[in-house]
Amino acid sequence: MKFKIEQKTLLEGLSKVSNAISNKSLIPILSGIKFELTNEGLYLIASDSDMTIKNFIKLDKENIQIEELGGIVIPKNIIEIVRKLEEQILEITVLDGIKILIKTKSGNFYLNGYEKEEYPKMDLSLNKNFITINAKKLKEAVNQISFASSRDEGRPILTGINLRILGDKIELNATDSYRLARNILDLKEPVDESYNIVIPTDNFNNFLKTIDGDSDVELHIFNNKIIFNYENLIFQSRLISGNYPFTSNLFPKEKLFSITLNKTQFYNVVDRAALFTSDKEKNIISLIVNNNTVVIKSGDGIGQVDEKIDINENVEKEFKIDFSSRYMMDSVKTFKNETITLTFLAPDKPIVISDKDSENLMHLVLPIRSY
View (spheres, rainbow, N blue to C red):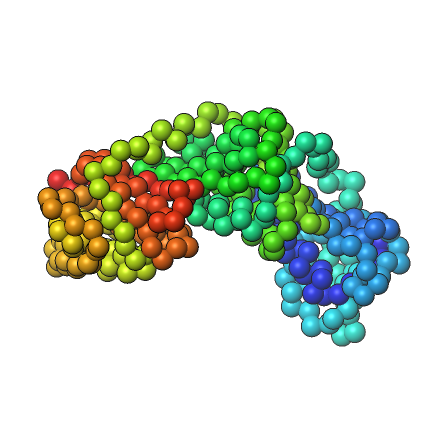
């Protein structure tokens, strides 16, 4: 294998597959990136068995010049080497099948690698039936709910994001059993088959980091994996097996009352109140609604605070509820609209946070007993 390529082009391709490089794998070769040079261009593949990323750099006389086809698996060190090279054009040559030479005008860089045949076979075949959705909308929707998924491996099913696909809707859910976030997206075309899958949150987020643009992404769903096909990139992730909790019925149909708040103002007030809490894990604070005023209170041995926010609604009977400031802030900051709605049922019932102008995005935060 021998070719010339722009430093910027190669670095961009390497960066896209880097999230799938294994750091703890028992298979040493998975700590590297597979290079495969064909007549069409350069394929870069990385995998940690849990997820696999394949990026294609199309043959273009301006950014890649092929002299000899072939392949090799190169240690991840190549990413930092390429990043720090100042040359615009790099000449890359495979020596003896297991060594790579990166040649520039100022010097030569050698890296020991593996023969490409030693790399595990990756089945990245696409499905005939797939779901198409706008990548930008998908990225925004996942970013607005992923914070609520669990980090506790004791309940693996909750460490993922649940996708329920039916007709022309995709419902995305995330929960750690203390909070719940749901977002609903419209599909361009309805699907004939329904799906109910769980994608590991970390894998989903890693995929979203690799995409940037307003193109469509294809979702190819299999029994135990999902493949995202986006432009010149294929991203494969395993699915989490098990039954995800049915969350739709957790959002209450009734309500005691609702209030509308400025997102930024409310976030900042809650953030300041959290400074006066001693439990850094939960940061429990109180919200009191009375007449046309919301009061946020907190305090412990270091002091106390109560800060007021004027609201348009008039709540005649005083209402008090305690909750985790961290959970509330995690939720509030994901909303794009500057006006949010908080809906209350009772002091011991969940708080529903929603977008004033849309019912597609809803969050639920459980109250916490402070006594």
